Picture (cartoon, each protein chain N blue to C red):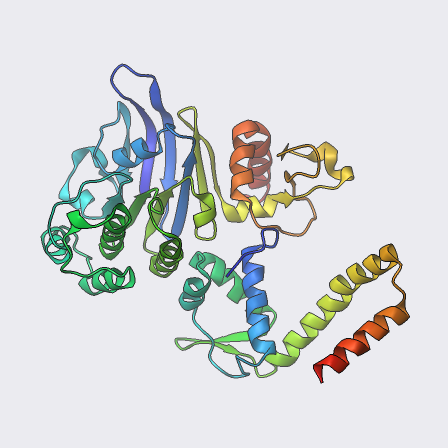
Length: 283
Length: 122
């Protein structure tokens, strides 16, 4: 659906931000896009939506190149950026002026979400708090029903009950026809929603696997002494959490924070295990 | 739902189903919430919810009526009781026995404590 091929990017007179990136985003999934600060997550999202142009390579949505900024492509993709400015219009006017760009926009869904987020259509957006503005944009993004929905740090600025509400809303909106990409540092907020992890480091994709494969092949938890030789990564040597090859052990939930740290420090070891078993199953 | 970090989320959803069936909140031959509703309820990816539904369907605890939804099997309660009793005997009890011997708690002490608790309930 959304394809990134041989993508390179750097801002004028700075080091490369993205180097030969290849990614495939498929419908029916919620992707988690992780990386340390300044590793190009937001830049990648901006390129996908045609807000920035790649130096080389391309990003296409159902064969339509993002660089072209054509109506055909843009009507099927929506980005909820981390930072944004919204006009000083009422929520209702904002909806009226923006929604015609999205053929699948659902007015009903938008106002249901606005109500769920405890906002009123008559409120003027510029007078809302940051978190409330974000909710307007999240509600709008979901209601566009675009094939691809990109969200950059969506839970930043949301209060505690709203984070739970956000998860509920996301759980109910994803279906087989849509693809959601969420970039975040708030792993704890979203770990139950994400089913595929992409990690960027040093301007490259260092990890790209479905969590189903990760939990099938890796084991997360506190290892016993006899496990020590096979430990792939551990947080601290004494009784800390570790990543091991799963072998015959019970399936454990993927600890995303541990996985992230593990991939950054031992990318080769972890990828080798996932890749090898990948070939065996013929996937 | 608060998730235990070690157990796969889909199995924790399965436990949530077991609980509802055991306390008879969900009766046999009764329709249960849809995949989407469960995903929303516990705030998880619908794919994870589907995995829980498939697991329970394989165990014949629930079944799918095409186009209508999922139902608790006619012997769903008995099935769950069997599964949970087996789990207690094979997983929970050995842990308890291990702890008892570690702490030097005798069977008689356990029996007394058990009787006392039962009496307090009445």
